[in-house]
Length: 77
Image (cartoon, rainbow, N blue to C red; front, side, top):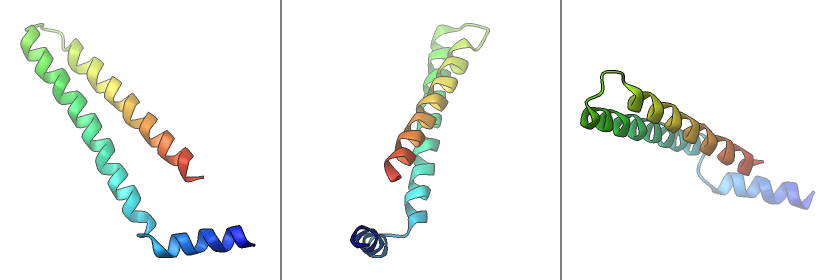
């Protein structure tokens, strides 16, 4: 019971849970946005007709964002 009481006190003393997840959503948005922007910038520099760099960096940034989400959720257990 001591461990449960300690966890309960930690939850009550810290910020509400939804604040953490709002911050996490902004992080995900930032990662995907930055990756897509970098892909767009690289695409403009390469002057290729097919948007390969936008696609590569967009999908890569989505993968990185979901990996960060998974690590964060795993840490919460």
